[in-house]
Length: 501
Image (cartoon, rainbow, N blue to C red; front, side):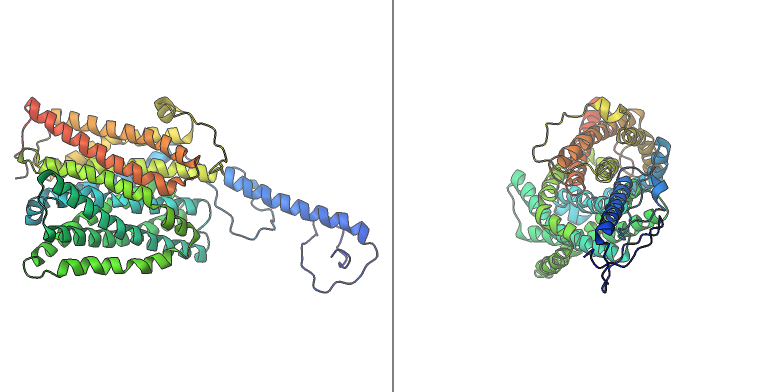
């Protein structure tokens, strides 16, 4: 092809790579060949250097004005963050999410006395499982889209909408399946201790769970997409704000939907035997449509086929927490636990989701190999390295841990000022509550450090696998520790249950 090239000026800097369709002969082809080969090599090497620099370090932005032969969108540079900047960016979404969980707790404190919750107590088992959808689905969606935005996969409108549609369809499929399985788990956990099975109640649980999961996931998915796009436009790291905001309205919306839908369907049991099966069948029938849409995007197609294990296991873990909640709040002596359960679970889940999303983005942006043929054994991180290391992830772990105590004090004061719950906030209660919350978050942040890196080195994308496990464990630990606190307080004589009655 180099036999027929037009003469290229020899002035430095005037070379240009062009595709020629009509090329005349020239006799000095041998002399021209080395120049063209060197030019092509230099251009390719230069493009590769720029791509590596953008993936590895934002500080090498001095080459951004150079010309590159790669015309694809250039990934945005990662943002440099100090402890102060991390705390500042996380603080507002953290408080917003916390007040959302406070509102959810107030709602649960009220609806626990509704007829459907007293007659069909298995609905309590659905509460952590469905509230956990924000971790299983919405926070995972936020983490995936945050990573995609940070590494430049949503810079063009075409790529952005393709990613959005695929991910929305994916979470609708997952929400329908998880809602259905959560209802089965609630029926089983409710049937085993008592040995009493009612078909009408089982169908009610199925219809309520599937409808709540579907509608809540659609609303929260749309909110997440808007938050992530807005974050990138104003120069905020989406990892710091997306996952907490997913929970700010997530718990409230999901719990309100569950209470409203289950109450309406419970009333229909008396007049119409077909309403509940029809509701369940309608949402299940939409599943093939969402599957077809999700298969069109490569990233969501992979999750559609391989991302079920963490979501289903996380749902099962959250359901165990729901069983603890059901057996605890059903005891009138521990009715005050209901208002605090969404708060402690939500705060722990929000903080660990932020940390897991940040570690995952760090691994993606530093272009570390996601899997090796024979990965070398990796030592478990120590608590010292997790919280007191010099890296950016240890820095963020310290910031997130320091938010726990002041955050919970603000939320407890808010609940008390609104006269919510059934427990007076004595100094003994606050001490036990904060001890439970701090222990929960310490365990979760340590597990996040270990789990995200462990999954990465075994070829699993942490965005899809880690957050469901971590938030489900947060629900189980939070509910378990809180129930333990109430039992201990009852044993030592702190038995005030008259507030809010």
